[in-house]
Length: 265
Image: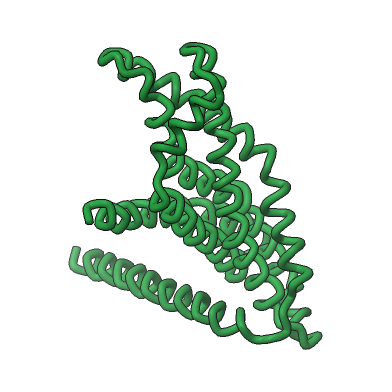
């Protein structure tokens, strides 16, 4: 029994050591990004290419998701408001919910699943097939070309996708409200813009930047450090999605607390 207890403690100790080693490696990986992002050469062409892949190629999925979110949230909110005879508040309620929370969060989660997994799998496959090593031998900085460009692209494009998702979700909500309450589009958006403040828009964009940075950095880190052949590529893609989503929820929680402090003041 004593031997088994000692073995368990040893295994537990190794897991703790591996966890903190992983945190240290991740910190070094992130710190290297800030060290190299401002140093030439600048891979503008690759950044634009990645922006196209992350932004334009995500539009169909983002459009469908945002439109459905607007319709579903409107349908879910109407019964509660109708109990108090306050269905006229629907546009204001929808605008606040979408701009403050649902738009950024839904977009970030969709991007984590589509973009994060793609980045992790792409860089992971390059790692296990030794393409990254070949880039280093040919005097190319693989970190700058593969990591910096993708993280910049996600950081730039996720806020743009969030604003687009907000618009599409509001259009879906308008179609639902118009069909049930016969509200005109001018009246609907007048209530929308009267309810949304500058703080709502500004905070939404700022946290979207952090969401984009998190998705790109986690995907690149997992892909860059993958191993064990094709199995490692699959694990890199899967863990990139899971960790990105977990961190996005943590960031959403922290941002909510910080923004509420400004609203109280």
